Length: 388
Image 1 (cartoon, helix red, strand yellow):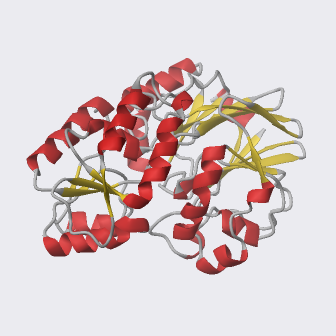
Image 2 (cartoon, one colour):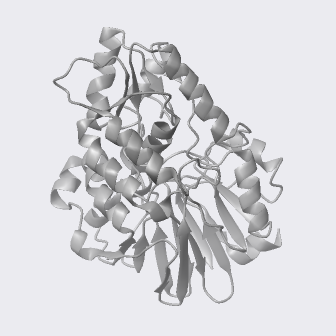
């Protein structure tokens, strides 16, 4: 079995990898890299796509699905596997992040989507693909691919210690591709949630919290200390996420449903509210927050950013100028979570995706089998990685 590292290795964004065994070849995720341009915006998929038998998508965030229209424009004609929640969210992601001409010519191909549920086992040629809940978003999954001789587990984006979502245990494997987004950050999610709650309490006259539509929004709703508003366009999606009780920890759905029912709906025509306002997306690149960040900045309305800020993104520029604060709301594994994933997977050889080289080095001191020199564009032979 071989892995082609097509994006997200030694970098954050354009997460994608191909798994091959004999004549069978599948693609896991096809993301874009916010802040990049030209070829670096897309997975490093050179040449023909005719040898790709199937595409499996872990969830609908832009760094995992944003290059789908690009892939279709290159002639990909095979099936596309994803959960129903990913299918429902994908068109909006592509509208915000795909090249407009690609998206016009190759909109989301709903008729080619083959649905599965987290926990299902799928097949493509001689490859068997197990899935499990990721703990990152409703409908998000990890993949474990085997060919009868080796097993590779690709975490995609996971949250082992989420306060909202359930993550299933990744099985024993020969090679583990970890979500290393935070390197060796030791601060648990509960501590960060308290820090965000305290920041919001200090800004009682109102504030803006840009957030992805799925995933982190529910984590923030659970953490907010009092009344809040949401951009009205978010409500139906948030209601659907809260209704997916199988993806949520016991009792959380009731809490979130009550909090969302009490939340005020806010529209672009309204004055900025005297309470926290959630608006998507988290970087200010697309959606309502792309309009709200400049408006908040002009009005002196406090802004709290809580996730990844690609260099040059509106949120990044505002933060660097000292006009927005930042507190990470963990939606990826912190140190204890990744060590636990690795130990439960049998302490296999490991790679880290969505992480810069310096942070990978920090993580390696806790996960000795982590290979820190792997980069986008390289090929990994699983049997060789297992021997090291």
